[in-house]
Image (cartoon, rainbow, N blue to C red; front, top):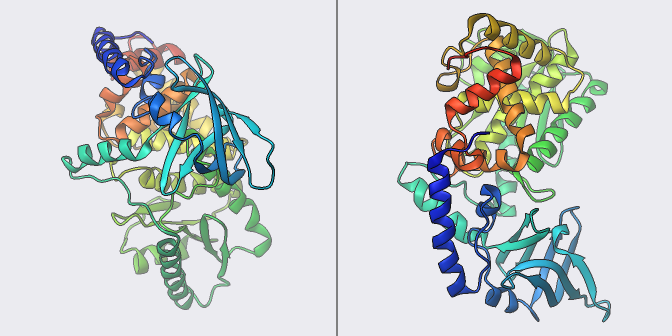
Length: 420
């Protein structure tokens, strides 16, 4: 992507200012790469890293395994001593020192303080980031916008919310007592449905796949739960029951042509209602699509994601979870054909997505950004959730303006002089 002069100048200022600050704090100057520059924000200095030696810590690795109550014996570092290649530690069970590449570590915790490891590909090393300091910075910025970072939940709070949802589903069951409603619970979801029991497992598997795909895309720790307790899925075989549920329990008298709806509440609650219809494969993709909207809602902060990003990402995740479903590919092809003919996105990037071709276009643009660089896409998405307008976040992450993005997309589909 073509880099803007503004980004180059601001990056130069950041590097010069950051170099002076790094010298005072014994830190390696920040990298020019935007992803790595963001990764080293609030990272520990050499002195702070050295102070961890001899401390008893808990380690969470990228494969989900843990090592608790281990003692740090040393770090293999370079640069100013704040870039970590290797972590050495001892366990209570063995006096023999263990060695782990820092890239395999996700989080290091000391008491109630946790540091996240951020990998820097350019030097094949990591930094330890004080995520609480970053969170405080984000919170301060969002308060001025009337938004907030989602609060941390204790295990007790999560269980309380899960219990509340189960009581709600009992009321749903009483209302639909003529239907064979059954309850299924997974690590992240409460699934309530009148589907035949032998048809439920594939859909729950798809939801778990969605949770995994988005967790990896956003950089969550292995097994981390983004939901307010658990997300609720109420799925019916037939449309009439879905419409009745929406009217009686969601105060939604008109569902229009919708086959599924995601209800994301200001308190963090997420509930998806839907009906299967005649195409089970498409329903699987739709279920993932709608639930991913709830995931986006619960990610990091209450900031609302622009419609084209929200819908495009939901389509992208659904296609990853249900790769053989053809409807999303048909929408993308429809968008390509239409845009070649009309030469206009018709305000897609500034309005609400509506219509098959717009879903297809949004999907293709998100896919383009992720393929360009998944880490830069995460930085782009995070920037929006941190309170930046999406256009500013695009410049920060990719060094490209909104018109640059339109031109890149136009080239990818063979459209000439595509207008926004």
